[in-house]
Image (spheres, chains in turn blue, cyan):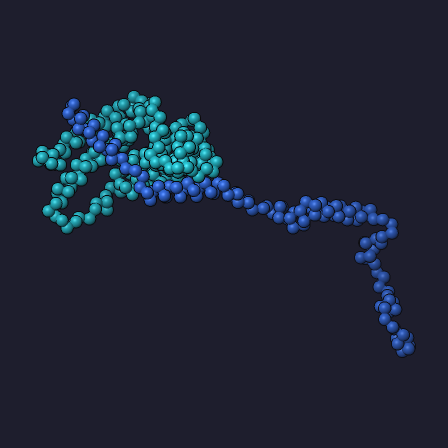
Length: 117
Length: 205
């Protein structure tokens, strides 16, 4: 067994001596992989796609714009419910049956119409 | 335990300082964006990875692919690496062995495509085959061992790793490693003895 072990140990020793260095092209490939990963980590992360809500806010001019929009809408609702006295009632304006108008209001010389009578 | 991380094989100029760092520290540096760390790690760990893959697979192209793949996984895991939990080399050996097992499982039983084309120099074919076989007697004998025995023998007797580290790599006890290497060596001896005659050792070769 000792002789057999000796032969095997010799083969192991030869195998250890024959341990090859990393082939140059393989070393380059490994380095390229490392560099690709390193640079991808250094680069800023891609921005996530904005949500529909974020895009809507952006369209109306950001949060300030949205605030103005909300304030204007609230004022509109308030005016609708409790209009100041000097404003005409919008409901009456819409449903008014009064269709009388004066030609003179059209803003041009209508005297020739008077001559025909 | 011998510190296997202290034998960089190829260190160049600016990497001298990095070469004194542990694998752990280098991996952390790489995760922090230090380019030189990858170079030192490649020089230090790449050859071991490649050597094991060559012995496990006996095929240069496959060994190169496994080495590149294992190193790629190292670069990828760098930011998540927990220092002190395991040795980087232990982790890398384990990944390499697993990749080798995957490749061997994927291989079809038909290995005809791996056989090189015969050359015209017919007179020396037998001599050359015997010579190649002698040179690679160990490799061909290793190929006949069961997977786990081959892993244990390669790590113990070619990579010269201590048994506790082999146990960590293979996920078994130290006793199991001792048993695997002992059985592996016995099997190798039997295989090699049986081949002596067919390899022409008795003809003064």
